[in-house]
Length: 306
Image 1 (cartoon, rainbow, N blue to C red):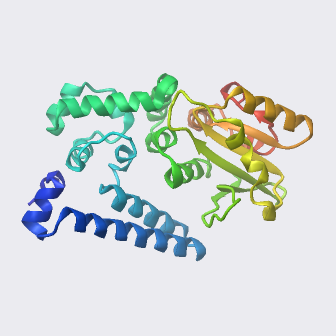
Image 2 (cartoon, rainbow, N blue to C red; image 1 turned 60 degrees about the vertical axis):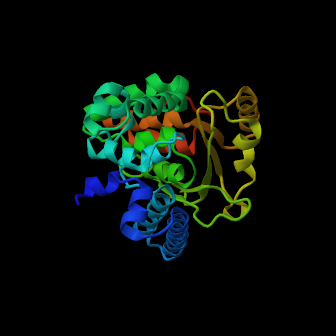
């Protein structure tokens, strides 16, 4: 049996025909494996084994969703698509949001041999998630591709949440795009920030990552400013909230008020960070400017301030 044939089996057929186990039992096994991988990731983070930790985190997510690494981006989309259908998409070259949106449902269904209705549902849900940012995201993906760079990180910035989004953001804020040391705070107790930034002067900055479930909603005041009370033990000098899709007026007004008191506080839409990432590869945004944005810019840092 080929790998593609195995992946396209329904869970029920796989369980009863080949494993002789109930679906409930196999789901429990998957859940336990996800927990074990998550625990292994925490151990790896504590030992400074960053690459290993990231691999275990992604493996944990794969056990949770029951998918390959390539299909994880689609498993994060809140649309009930069968496991075999997701795998069929990626096995036939539809590995990005751009690929799914830029092809007709008929073509995708024919090539991947999946239901056209399922493809249409996935396309509709992607459009809903991107919302008003859809034209910007598609433009950024095409520009990044023209620079010879895959759009996987861009897709993650616009669609994922939780640890995957935090890690995608840290992966973006790495050399050569950003020269500062940016890392996740992986052991998060109550009141911990998501991200730690070591500034040029050796002191610390912190960041919170917030993504709304609805693309038409905006990050509110409480979420936007919560970073100001986080990780006091780091004695942070810079406070950042990365938000998706954007921030509401109360958040913007409060950010301006904090700036007037001298606090280095900034709100950065994730779409603006994505734009900066694309401009870097286009050669119109330097790593020094990226450092300046993170260290010295204050208030609401929109695309026009890049």
